[in-house]
Image (tube, rainbow, N blue to C red; front, side, top):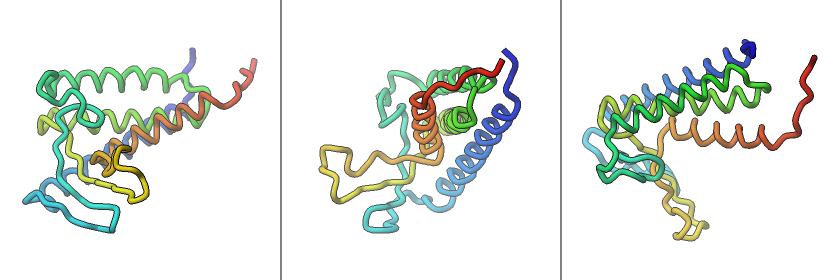
Length: 167
């Protein structure tokens, strides 16, 4: 199938933006703001913290069972598969979602290769959510936001009515 050039370019541009913002902010947070590590209250529900996530989402597999190189390799394989999917994306919405996920996956893979863990520093606790529902929410970063928002966009795109292919 022929690549959808506009969607491919848009998706790759978004991946690059997420990657650059993520890596720049992580370097600034780790080397400047969180040296030494501490908790910085920003609002009543938002803090800056320094958390090293050695696992995957929510710290799963972080007990040393799977090393940073294996997790990075997995993330890069997933980014490659998603990039191939992006080449044939039928909608702009799908291209946007895939681009966000690709940029986030590569950003977190770089962290694992560079530091052996992912640098997370945003912490949110919403007072009206019961404690049993992740309160405070696990710490996260820009790459995590790209992945989460991108997955949501891909899901929304999949739920929209199918478009008829132009022949």
